[in-house]
Length: 443
Image (cartoon, rainbow, N blue to C red; front, side, top):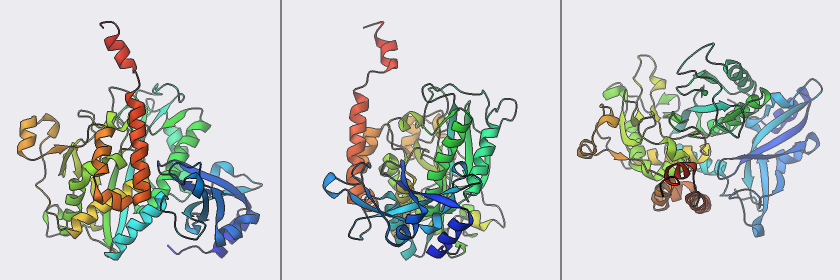
């Protein structure tokens, strides 16, 4: 797609009667931030960026270095459907964050991803991803009560949220985001809308937009949507399986008809790199205390570090090759959840895979048995290890990872580790309803 210029943006603004432009960016924890400017300020914003105070943004700056510049990316211009009417429109653009001296701000997650994508580009690759984000609809944000008792792929009358999914998809399409399909998920009131694969930077922007759209359409319908990984005990949590591949020009570098599963040596090396670093990147792809309530055996969430073609209990799945669909050759990384920061998650997965390619890591044999039914001894014999069991274990492993420190950069790495340790300290001091119910009557 051709790059948009300042002239293109000014023309679009005039055609769509745009009065306000929202400048969006993301903090280190993956929360969408932004502020609005009028069209009078647009030309200056496109030329020089807009200054703002970064001291109140998580992980952005200390008080003594609080001035930041937000430079809008013209390629991300889109009209916000729910803020626009006949009289005037509101648009949005994602921004890259800079320091006042013109240097890219190293604490900007979008910059982190762009830096890692540049490494892939230097190796001749473009990184494509296609995430599957699951989420729940509840009556409100106070209590996780399902709206329906539907199950996987159920239709009416059990699936009362079809209208919400339809309006969500139409809104995303209006924003230029391509959707592959949507359906009811396994758990009651759980849903999934899958985005058509795109380059990782575009997709990270799309994921941020997707989460906002899902919540906004839910609000319009008088309900609440959440991407919390495990809001209800005893049923499946919400994941974000990430399909990924590397391309060299128009050619899928993961495809080789002469290799087993048609997965090329590059694809095998990439997969091996992901498996090797899975424990180190888990705090990035599953970044909340609640994330580890999802990563337990028995609820379709992968906890064992291995790969397979058909076995969905494995961490990485290699979908079966279909003749004539060489471009669809990919691997599916199944542990991330939809509450992660997509810029950092895609960066960590890419860095792990590229390490595998650079070091020509050999891919172990696939695990074709259901790992949940294997004994600990059987898993030990075939060398199958587990992901970290909680956020504290995950963050301790990440803290020792040179790959992740290089991938995130010192500023984001230091802030992320510090913040997650604070989250764990806060969590471990809580007295939960489980403890009250279990111990108060007997102790």
